[in-house]
Length: 219
Ligand SMILES: C[S@@+](CC[C@H](N)C(=O)[O-])C[C@H]1O[C@@H](n2cnc3c(N)ncnc32)[C@H](O)[C@@H]1O
Picture 1 (cartoon, rainbow, N blue to C red):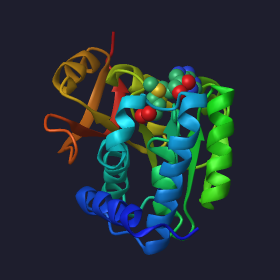
Picture 2: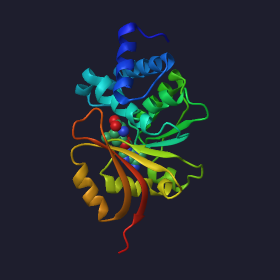
Picture 3: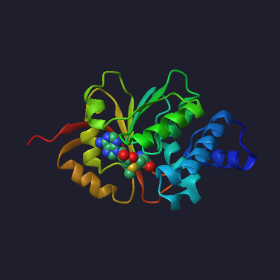
Picture 4: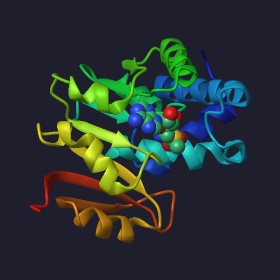
């Protein structure tokens, strides 16, 4: 699919804002993803409809910044992918990074069907798991470099969900809004965390929380 000039310019601007260099093919994949999101949102309720008018900044740049933070990661897992944020946006970037793959975990069957069809049309290295996160990760065996989750749960719960991957060497990339301070305080009641905070490129008070290590606080 060849995108029109203004769509491609929007994709290019989003990538620049996120600090990630992407090819023309990746821009086209992102344009296709946005058109599928727009087409299916009224039926599948993938994102809040009022966010679609600012989709390139609010969703695409916001998710691309995660790909910029882990340029060498090969295997990714995105928890609670919903309509593909950040999973399919990262997958579009991974399509130009050899030997990479992202696994999207989404238990709602309608959304998972959208993810599967969008990934197929985009031609990206994504595998969709239409099951609950807890069950998928309890049986996980493959080495994972990065686990992501956006708008899924507060940080303490994200750590609890992703700890099977964190304890085998993955790091977490969790975008958070202005409540990041209180979420870190709450998480510290349950977890000894090794974290790095990176300012969000799309949200003034937002931070990307990188979790490098998580151990339960001894009770
Ligand atoms: C608020 S939405 C966020 C979706 C997307 N990450 C985003 O940023 O737009 C959370 C998604 O996680 C899914 N979800 C919640 N708990 C889950 C679980 N335990 N296992 C699998 N999916 C789950 C929901 O079905 C929903 O689509």
